[in-house]
Amino acid sequence: MTEQLLELLTTYGLPALFGAMVLAAAGLPFPSSLTLIAMGSFVAQGELSFWPVVLSGAAGAVLGDQIGYAFGRFGGRPLLTTVTKRIGGADKVAQAETYSRKWAGWGIFFSRWLIGPLGPWINVTSGLTEYPWRWFILLDVAGELLWLLIYVSLGRQFSDQVQTVASLLGNLTWVVLGLLVTGFLGWKLFGKRKAEVPSEGTV
Image 1 (cartoon, rainbow, N blue to C red):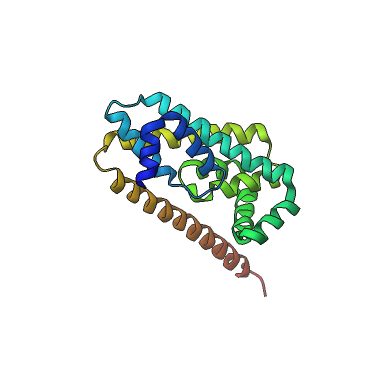
Image 2: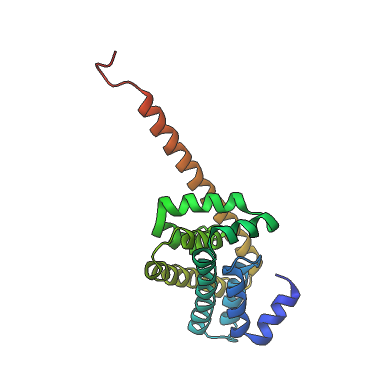
């Protein structure tokens, strides 16, 4: 975490956390997990209270997620195509859309806290595929609250090892994502090979 960010969180507390979570969930590059662990450290030091941190962070994250969802649903594919041509990311959008269509609600829930790097793209593609908003926000709130509870609790428990814990969790996220992708590809390959094997009695 940069010194500027740490100073911002220390000075403005919950409003700074809320704003940071909005930006991160909306897709801007931001060390959100590290921020939450740092906030947990502040809780351990008695500078902030646990539940206000969790609720403020979750509220900001949910708002940022709604921005992505609204962009996909009301901006439409033409606008998304224009944006990705300028800033890139068309391949990630395609991957996230496939993921959204296949896993639907589970994809929304798990991308809040377990495979966070996919979160902003899942928000957009959920809107593109017109996933029902009432279910989107329900799963979104549940996933974000779980994320905040886990990371702030870890920051509070290991308040003197913020950077180390954040690095371990970041690596774990990519390991889990890699395992999921590998498992999915293996399942598809196994299903394809099984379909190609002739059944008994087939000439």
